[in-house]
Length: 74
Image 1 (cartoon, rainbow, N blue to C red):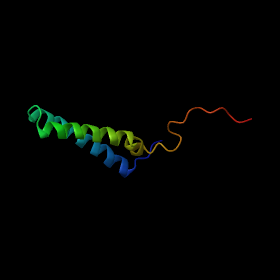
Image 2 (cartoon, one colour):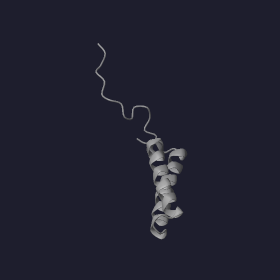
Image 3 (tube, one colour):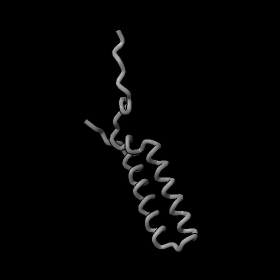
Image 4 (cartoon, rainbow, N blue to C red):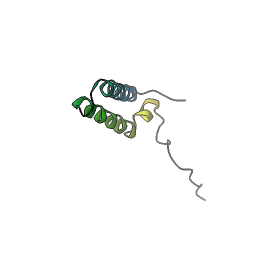
């Protein structure tokens, strides 16, 4: 079915670390502080990792993932 790939698992851990640390920094930093700016940067970094395809790497779904149904050639 699905094969896991190490780079995908590390990518998912990086996404979780980015968003987890962003929550911590956002809660402890006062309004307008450097901690809150870093928190927003970590949120953007996590979104970048998600759109780079690390969740697909984690499951090794292959090149067929996301293909639109094509009509059979006749």
